[in-house]
Length: 600
Image (cartoon, rainbow, N blue to C red):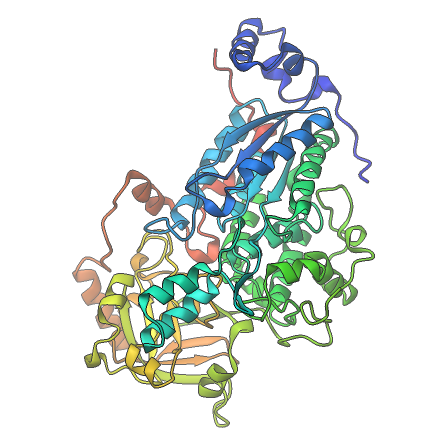
């Protein structure tokens, strides 16, 4: 365990509010109103740490809703360890339902949490996470304020089943859309089969963004070892909630803070683990954002340099065949870390939330099912990480290589005269509404070699960065057995999708990126060996298009619908920089560097 100097009760941050003889009036105002529902004077003044619990569960956030019950065990653990729990709400973030996209909510939740952690009498905090963006929002805020903080994931749902077939949340939706388009099933059956994938409380049971980001919290060292992928309904989930509460109190006495853990080594570990998990294409956005708030420069070149050569070890949908239950029972994140650590791919000395090193935590761990978590020498895919593509259309765009299917590889990447590369005519869509309205138009002449481009889907254009790049082909092609085409865009795609799209293109069309200049009928070359994407249009023509675009007022995008949309559009950084708010990363360790001013 950690040998850090321990705090004394008079050093607790909460004493400034609750036991401050120099300002008796302010102290009385703080104390008396908290006592109106039964908190005792002894709890507030006897030197017990006040531990906040950021409650992300609500009726609007079904993937996190069971935190409403789990925090009861968190509170039990806090009290047992000698602390006082204070529960408060986190702005709701629900990926599937929020329109125009839940990506708008990550930064809003981050801002709200920063203000709570900075301005209220909290000595430490338990961050309850689950659905995709609740995890990065919490970790970004933890890095900014830097009071002792620990992550508690709600865990994935139980396996979905239809008969003896596993049904993975999210992933099955993309498969069923193709079957519906092909006429194999009708609308009623589509909905019935989709609901099979969500049989219990918890977030996605696939390695979508939710499971990925909660695994990233563990890989970064910010949650208890082995806790990320315990299924939501399992008894172990309630047990680890209790242990998390206990640990939160002990961390306060140790003064163990997020910036002690969120080091360069921790982020490099997360990149490597993400590749081995076949993690979501949204992970680089969120991990880069957390890194920026922690003062660590991490970019998409790092993701390729550190992660592309890492093999795929987790046989979990969408890159594999199994789901969260099997992954947890096979050893979860620690088993994967042990395989990687034994090959020298992780920084074993990295400090984690329990005060021990990564090496200490995974000592004795092993793969318990070698089909679900593969050994390093027997991976599903040899090189499973992301490629950071560049060219005359963007400065950065990511391609997730672990989900390149044999059919896609055969059709586009196995030309002996041009290996790992392909060319094609492009068809351009401006936003998801345009795509849905026109994808089946025969006049577009979409064929088996067409490249589909989605633009106007980025942080400014949509706004928020929409999950719309993974476009399915026209119904006519699907009926011919062609169920995938190359897709490229300045938006995102769901982490549960198995499409090897070229995503997160930065800069986006809406901010003047060259994607705004592309026209249907242009030809595009994608060269994975060179990590290059090139629009095959001469520079003079592109310059003329640029001049015409600017004369027309630039790339058009929808007006602001709410004040927050306008505020975020004004401040938002591009996807490759984590979609953070410009200037926000300058605020770091604010609890110590800038204590809040008196309110009376």
